[in-house]
Length: 177
Image (cartoon, rainbow, N blue to C red; front, top):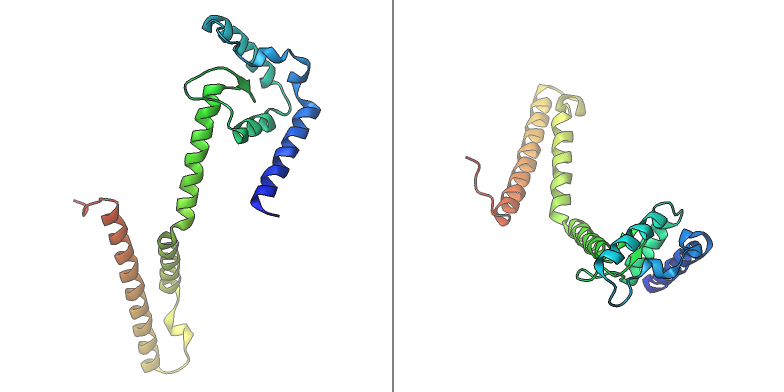
């Protein structure tokens, strides 16, 4: 299934849920939309009533998601209520979701951050190991094992320090005072 097919399938599921259980199905449809030229004071009273209807609706979340998927709402015009939100609130929610999605995608692309996390885990694991218990042999072999472990720990720490320094420099951080 393609992403387009999945979006259309989800849209149909949402619409079916709304059709089957929305409280607004028995309300006047004009309650949820501002009439052309309607005074703000009149619309505010109707909008409050529409939001009260939405607040107790069992499919409010589905209605809100469908409204966001459809691009309902406008930052400059308060002319509707869907899913318990006014048109301006829907527009703000859509913007906030877009920002959260962008941040999530950016975090997914942060391979350097994942590498840093992996290196820190590897360093902690290596530092917690007992080099004397790894190898059988005399004192010379134990000294070599400790030396090897020390070199691995130093290399990991240097890699972590290098990545952190580069990330801080890109973010505009100076050396801590």
